[in-house]
Length: 77
Image 1 (cartoon, rainbow, N blue to C red):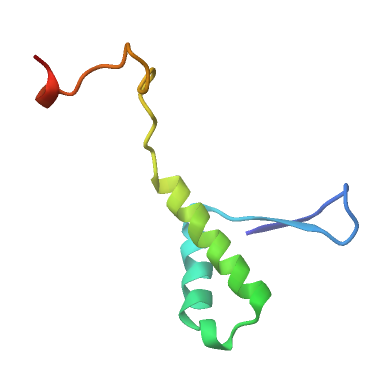
Image 2: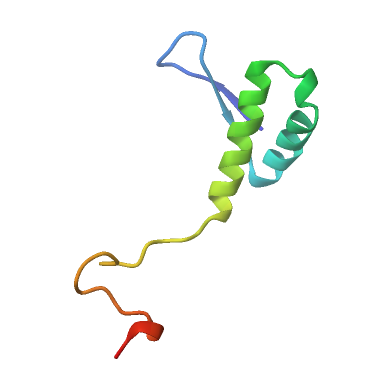
């Protein structure tokens, strides 16, 4: 984890995590949610969301919603 103080805003910090670190930090936070403060829970949920976003590699095909969209094999004539 890398911690950097923001030069643009006073009192703000930038936290940079690797993919492996996200799981190591998010799991214990979410696992003990009843004992955690709101700020830590927000961090845990943001880390979990980032982890899901890294796994999601779906990209919408080009022209998917236009008349030129490729037809699915099950609906072709």
